[in-house]
Image (cartoon, rainbow over all chains, first blue to last red; front, side, top):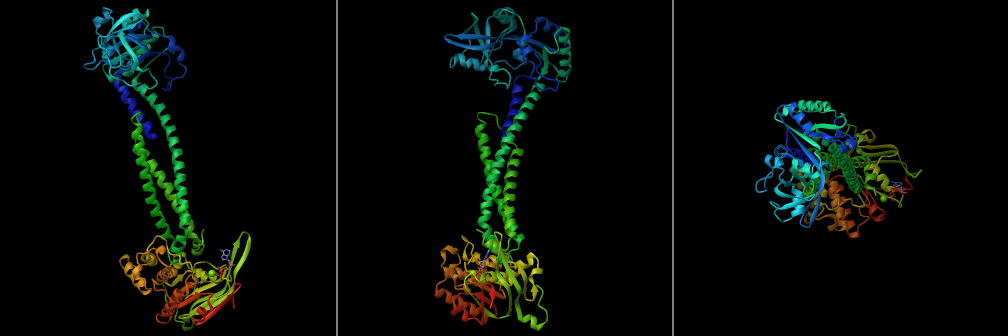
Length: 367
Length: 233
Ligand SMILES: Nc1ncnc2c1ncn2[C@@H]1O[C@H](COP(=O)(O)OP(=O)(O)O)[C@@H](O)[C@H]1O
Ligand SMILES: [Mg+2]
């Protein structure tokens, strides 16, 4: 259980790295509250605000040692032969491919160029999943897809990104030069701005600067968010921590249930063995010797039980990890082991202790 | 263990009960099984206890054998008041001074004859290397050398009781207490055991107290005690 939560955290930070580093994002709406958690009141702004080419120019001028690039996002339907799919059309620039790690790898074509943007060439780069969904086994390169009546040539396929938790499924997006998208969707609204920083240390300054600039552009401070991936990451980690706590709760409940199981077995064993305790006392065992015997047995039994449990847990985690990023940590092993041993030992020894205090004949007569 | 005092009169009496009462409290009603027992057993005596069923024979034996505590009264073993002893001292007496033989044998199941016999040695200071030799010696004495590895389930009643007697003897106890040792046996096995008891008493000088409801066996003792309704007659 806890291994699932831990695996999730690692998985997500890897995911973020695959989306590019040294990046600051500007998005519409208030995404984070003052404590850096995801805000729950930003929905309205999220839909309404958009940025303009002018904002981009001002940001570019105001921020040093950075690369600022826009992206617009619009829902569209794409068509290839008889296959139709709903997707998100991302209009952006050359820099998006480079700095957000969207460049297609070798043999998967290429990202579009500045000339193609300037000449409004009708070219498109497909996300991994949408390429699969639309083309299946066919190689999409150089095929033409239709978006809002425009024929666009597929020039590249982005490598699989995996879905980003809570965020959009980037693998299902299609990417075209921003000037082409402005024409296709009939407006030049910009939904997100990415700012790549040359130096990681500058990121917090850049965020402050970008906020000031946008406020001076007359945006309400509630209308946009400036954040970086570490911030996003820590917010998501907060959620996962909560999730892990919940899962740990479930794990705790199963440990308790398992513990009660062990306890019952131990109690049955002890009542069966109270006669034995009586006999041992009758032939001269001192109560401490009996306790020691039961303690050793309980330790061996519970440790064996704990080991078997951990092996099964490891197998389970391994099985789940095929579908879900789960991971075993030492602390969860120790927890499981500790609880099963503690329960085994306490409930193995406590009744033995009680039995060893009876007179030999009382214990021998025990039914 | 502290040696007995130099008082000669006292050293004759190995076991003594003074006004022993044993009551059971079951579900609010008090039942008195032993109603004030006084008894002195001298070293080397061979004593039988008889009496009707339910008269308190086993209860008395358990108190003598330090397996149960009297409700009131005193038990003196080799002159020492056992109520003044600590738990580990009692354990030591049960282990070394007394050998108790039960009617129901009380062997550990799934455990070999040899392991059953050597069980008391675990709780005495006999080194583990010597335990098996001693166990084999004892089982030879009771004629079970060929059954060392048998579990109780693989032994006849008479053989099981002989294992139990070997266990009672393994620590060389001065006193052997046997509660109907032949009660669950056929007369031939019973006779063998009685013969062995005679040997232990005459040749090895051990004090023996045994319970029986067979008048012929009881008569073989040097002293007969009759108990009726919780009282020694
Ligand atoms: N644990 C006990 N609780 C209540 N009564 C008991 C208990 N043990 C023995 N008794 C009673 O004490 C009396 C004497 O029992 P016991 O000594 O076993 O008799 P005997 O061995 O002479 O047949 C019986 O009436 C029996 O029911
Ligand atoms: Mg009886």
